[in-house]
Length: 87
Image (cartoon, rainbow, N blue to C red; front, side, top):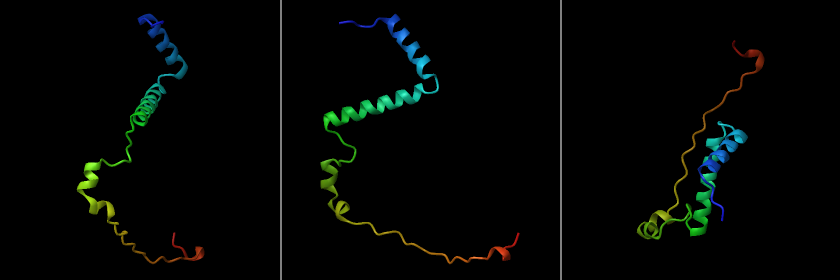
């Protein structure tokens, strides 16, 4: 099987730099890394949304308790007709 040597890697990197430009390379690398990390997590079965079993077993009241909604205060609004507005 063919393995690229140092010269071939440099040629490939120069072509990528020419095609995508220096401004888009960091975004391209970041999105490629994020995609590889998501793929690895999906293959290994890890998920960010899943809680570890130890923390769920230690705090059962936190999982079942519902938080109270924040208090909403309404301020009265006054509408002034356009002809009576001060400049």
